[in-house]
Length: 322
Image (tube, rainbow, N blue to C red):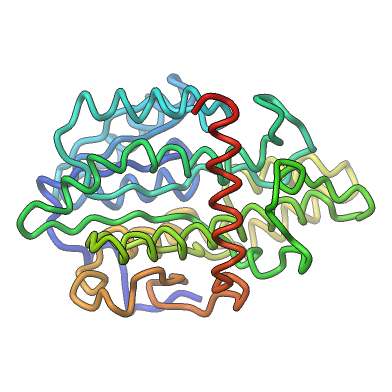
């Protein structure tokens, strides 16, 4: 999957750029923070756990931020609680006068069905609604930055090839559709995860259309990082029981790529110059390793379904006072 056509060393000097990477304290997110900070960017590692975030930042500093010697700061962010999401975005806007890139890397993988906040299942809240609300709250600053001379503002959503395997009958008419459990399936965890990634790609397409209609020069991209051996993958491998666990762990360690390489396509989407110079090709694109336009599922082009999802998301947030 990986070739020499792109590496983070190909990125330009990012000095003066301000970037948020959610889920940046582990896995692909942490590697993306490192790649971008090494080119001189000021990167906010948005994560829930302060100790893990600060440990991750120290680990990055030890690994070295030269040659760019950018900065890495912790931004408290809990995608599972929508009120905390809004507060995190508002706190950020009090600290910074510009925002060039938001990379949504935080995600739940294969987790049991659970509703922790506001009657919305956790995986939908963390993988889709949280990012939706975070970006919505940050929009004034993103748009203001996009008006600056020589600006290059981007929104990057980490996706997965799983988006193409979401159930064919997926609809988003109401909160019940968002909370679909797939009880009848043996693979309900996979189906719910794939559904959230499908939501994310519909969001990429719809947000890009809205920017284009408004004449806002912000580029929105979905990114498939590849099959990456992240902490989440390891945790899942250890959770499947004593018989399957060694098999899953062996497969992940042998065949999956490292988080550092897995973040190549994320770094490309966030800062590669060609995305801006050939923006017509990259608006709403689906980026695959190591940094090229891939082919997303045809279903993500369904404008009516994307609008249905957007409208239901807005209505759901309004119902909880957001």
